[in-house]
Length: 357
Image 1 (cartoon, rainbow, N blue to C red):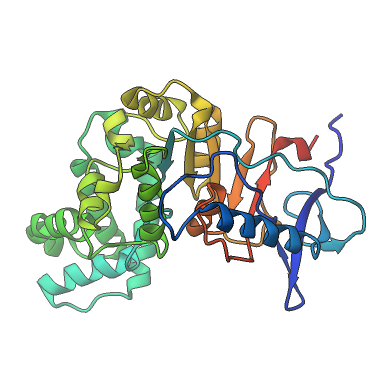
Image 2 (spheres, rainbow, N blue to C red; image 1 turned 180 degrees about the vertical axis):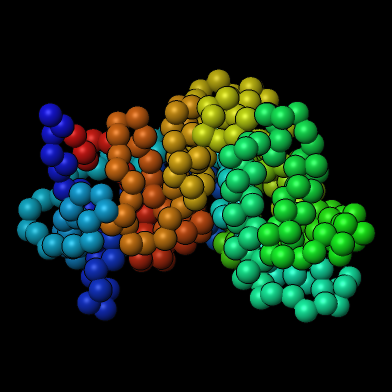
């Protein structure tokens, strides 16, 4: 018989009478060293430590029920000791692309509708109808032919051509309209819209995070940077168009590897290419628990799970998948001691399988 789940105890601060799950930041052993007078001098680090100690005195204990529970209960019992977020200076930090570093500039259906309307001028259904049709077609295609056609030895371009055509058909656009125009429609969507800034944009915190990590790297003490994404071979060109390709030492796509996250081999490829031999010296950042967190931890990496609060619906943990939760991409910097020392509210917590039997 399985043991009953034990409640997870987290530290929290009460802000405007609203309970927000927080954990006071702990200084990490691998705090980056820099000669810049504006950052990380001995005095600024001391002031930061003093501020954290003062904040800690005002912390209340909150007890959360089992994963998925919505009730928050105040308790006077001491919180369980949570393990440190990451205890070793990383040699490599990789990011997921879609939903973590980049996001769609507009819903997919908006672009499908606009491109077709531009070339035909006909009345068309609402953009959300195109979006719903796309999602259904895309999901079915991923099930039938995973990894953008890797399993069927077809090109990503042919794979996507099928998705685009079937989306238009599902919306109800007659084939006698689609067929003559399809090469033109597909070329614009595949090679222009969704390979550049018309279709994609950066997450609001992406540039700030990459700038700070690159500064750390350039001190000679920081980690290598990379991207590991379930994406096709257009990703390097897309990241270049968005102005961030040069931040990375390596960009790995599932299409080029012939496998998708959470397959551990895709993480192994990153280590091999960069000549890194310590798995626990690598960190992966992503917003998908099943692909990013499970994949990274199965490969022996540390995982940072980007997930907006509240944290009451975090996945149930096992001892095989410890991970650190960050409330947004910007909070990744907190984990590595790169955040603003004057910052008071921290939304980073650490989860490990030890909280559940």
